[in-house]
Image (tube, rainbow over all chains, first blue to last red):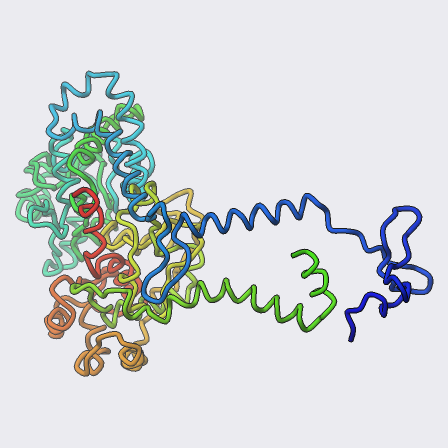
Length: 302
Length: 242
């Protein structure tokens, strides 16, 4: 193998120059495939310039930015940038920006805030985003609820529909891992006779239509076992997490079969406590948003 | 410079050697820090290893390919911290073999999912995501109601222990029993799980049925543990503010 241009195929043995293509003016490589010769087209200048620029940039980046690993350390660069710090600074900037209006939710007078339309115009879209990120998975994008997850876009509430009460629920959760969590539970009535459970289930299922016979044996079972939490006539509203059984707004369903299941196994739905993830102001913002969901979607409780 | 390249191109072996030399720079920059990882990544004092049930859930997570659409790494970008919480630290996954950071997000990041939703939601969502999130494109995993195979858990723990995860002899010994006990709060072994893995460990019937130990129990237990193994990352913000 040789690198002497004079020894290469097609080269002039004295000068080492190869044949010039008459059409393009480019040198040929000297390779010949049955009369077809390959042009030795020079590399485009612009590509070379780009290559030189990127190389120059990389050297500059090595000097200015964190670049090379050095065992347990790395070259930090003259700018001293740290991605983690940059991110936290930007987060700080975002939060400062937001604080301009969000601080008004720190210890809010909800009634006063709700009438401030300039504030609401800024806060409600932010609240919606917060709702979609955190609440929508269970409660639906518009608070329409789902199987086992309460509907928020109506006027029936287990505790109360005021923003103050909703904020407590969001912050501390229901049956959650929080010392101040709200507690709500249907105990399992599995000790009750099967036939009794069936007749009680039928009875509860007939409550919303107002067709229940309050002189039946099932009514006696209801008075003994259910009335303490759900109210004498199942009207609810005691603020202890037990729903009204007369308004069709239940979490799990109120057909006889579902009620039978509820009676047999009990229910103990969980809502996580959000105080560990969201700030107090964010929780209050969400509470106000949730309390207004029924107005915003134009729906009323039955 | 160009002349050098011109001549190099004519020596095929020289060119091969030069290509290897240049390309390996990229490799060295990526690989070299791994040789000192033992010293550069500080294990937080409060980091706990996964319980056997959570580990079984992690294996199901891998089996079902969850990592293909869900990352478990919050990047150090302001928007991500705002949405998901503090950015992920290397130390948080120090005992993950293999780590499941992932690089593709068709679904959301799961690094701090633990405790965000209720067990019932996870079960409903895994059975059919459309039931709870109508626009979801995630597949349904109804077969997770199958009984959990715990026979390999002991070996899994022993293997991880050899890789440096601090499972002691008792943990390895009790792996199968602990997996059963964690999904059945009334079981005798429930206290043993808390004793070995810490009070913070959730002992619940994750799939809603304490009587059966299912793959659903394991996967939900794992999902509820994500981001809860150490509080180390929650110190980041306060340091910067000071």
